[in-house]
Image (tube, rainbow, N blue to C red):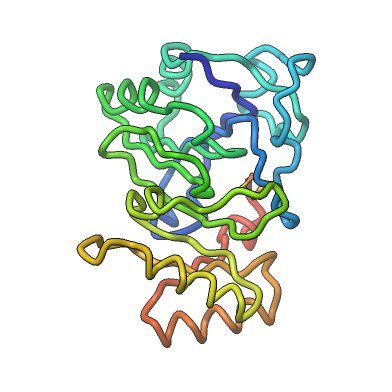
Length: 221
Ligand code: SF4
């Protein structure tokens, strides 16, 4: 299966429960969700006129909307060149695509996988993929967060700036099956002071985890 790839780079996971894990990020092109604070707006459109070669998306900081069309075998052979064995598939919205061919091949070859999704698309991935749902509620694209995505999540990483975001999160958590363990992380939006203070207070109150986007404080990709 072919995937539209915006960017591949090796770094340290900076968010959520896997913060600190050496990882290769595979950023797919395409997202219709429309978050106003999105920091990867260049990934929203899959414009066929922006098709490019693999060299232009690997180990370069690609902030443009160009993308390479790569299948799972091409991706495996590229990903095997890195030291990190944890592959984070992000976007854009990676669950616009069937991730089973790619994640199955990666697990067969000794990798672990993680996906970062808004929860607004059905999740098709390997059974051992660590699924991070960062629920996007009420965005201008008009998509709803799916209960099936919440129930597949290993962690829910919720962007937070206001008390309304906490209420949104609690409404989502109430939909999850009671026998499902899910790690809950609060992530202050854009490192704002008030958002961070709110997130710390709510994490302590509910025994949730704080996710501070470590890479932004370290000023790395
Ligand atoms: S879901 Fe992610 S990529 Fe899509 S608009 Fe929202 S923040 Fe951006």
